[in-house]
Length: 491
View 1 (cartoon, helix red, strand yellow):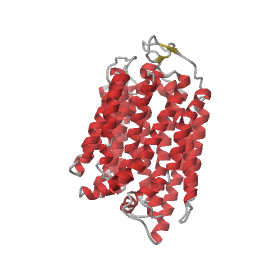
View 2: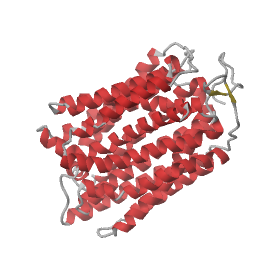
View 3: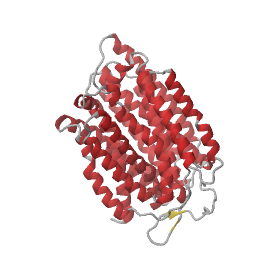
View 4: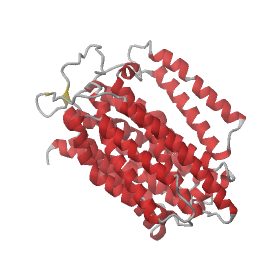
């Protein structure tokens, strides 16, 4: 196996681990509540702290990779993720577990921010779609393993091992990454400390306020937190437009393809990931399935997405991202539309078919959209572009969670919606019909967001995936047309 293949394997492994943790924790929450003698509203932060940390730090850590080496930051991220996983498994109480998830999320943010940039370093633009197709396989396989292993481990071994399972995998990945993943294009630039503080404060306040809205409803303190968080974006943008080495280079958004691709990723996360949350609430609360049984109905869609990912990536290499990515969002929109028609006794085969349609859409969208972002950023800014992309997607995930809980709980008390989502309660009588109406509204909201994402994707413009020159030796592929002395890094 050559070095490029090994590098791809390490990146896919990191993606798979992050995906496993995104689904495996949800299924174990009720058990963790009982084991640690905690309560539902405390333990929900096991999910939320992960989303908060990754949303706030991913952009900064992408820039850190540009400055000090993407592989170095990536490998350190694997180390922190592995240590955080061990801490989670050994947690003596709920507060320690939440804090340990924050450590784990820091490592995950370092992985996410630099994985796309590492792929772009080692593949030319006309072959990146295939590589991102493999990372899509990693995500979908990880999601499947999270669903299956989460139920098996929690039921037959114990919830602590859903975290311990990351430790041996992480150790092997660290050893392989240190040996094989190298840096070839490090560009030293001053770190934007004021920009980092402003953006971190803004995103933290927005995410914290939004999470509280999902948990307890809109209150005056939360409204104030959200307002301050949004207001901080004004001085942040002002500063970034005037500093020599900005944290987020807004010249990126002058590029039509790059801007549309990033915004499409944000809206796709906000719109489609919420459908999975809502669907699980439907299957558990209305149909009475366990979290494990409910999640298994989504496995066929993940399996098909895994199989189609590399092929769809190669398709985007040949024809550009616009058509495959737009088709992918359209299929996800169709799946959300199918879910909006769910009734009290809809056949499970209908749900499986809809999940397959959505899985095909995911296989088309992710490799094409990710490769479009990297194809329109120069090599020394890959980390920054990858960080912006993951930050927007992470914020979208948080919004999707808030959306699904808030809208679906308009017809029932919010604590009931939380209990249904976690599988600790199901519904009976007239409450079931009312809750189904709330779920339909949530699905319709997701469809509206996905429709906007599809329009943006279609408007991104046509790309040319030209071959580029490779440096001497086994270094990265670079675009020689971009000046290294301050020229526009976004082509």
